[in-house]
Image 1 (tube, one colour):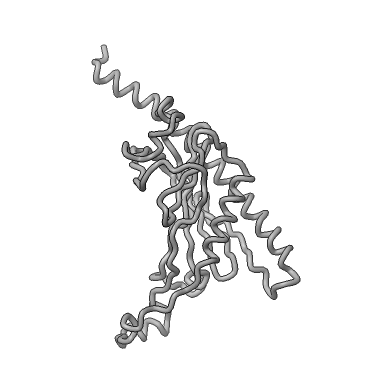
Image 2 (cartoon, rainbow, N blue to C red):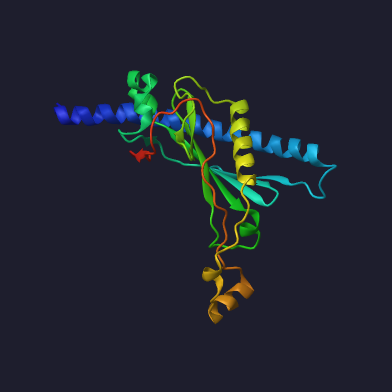
Length: 238
């Protein structure tokens, strides 16, 4: 006969295993919808710009099951789905939402990260160049979602208790990420950081660019409600 502790272990595994598989499946479905949206955006934007630019500025590329990217002129947005499911720290603002208070299992979420890089960083294999997290999408068992981003006024969230992710919402998120990324230009590196260089560095630069380059970005997503300050999700396993 199983002990009380064994029963607790079995109960937890049964509940969380099914829950996390459900959340993973939802997130993976949304990520595939996102790939479709990005491909459609490539065609649509290039068509609208064909008389204004010499080369099509948008290019979508599927990298793997969990990563894809959209080149936009001199920028690349990298979309990466994490293969694990996360729980939020107990101090996170989502716990103040009645939706989560009434169903703690609704807080378990998959994550799709959106990073911004310079296109030349990949073109010239500048492996030391910097990329920036523009935003991240959280998706739960009910296909409810919110987008987390950092602005000067703090962290902003969508209506996690009511918003259900769809292709229209995904396009809005991508358009916001594109507009925000394009609004930031390269800053000239400080002179003091560049005035001395070694022979080794210049030789390496002949073969490949090793001077670190990146844009200064923050988060730039608008939303409906403010629930709290920044807290990173806590990984709870598989």
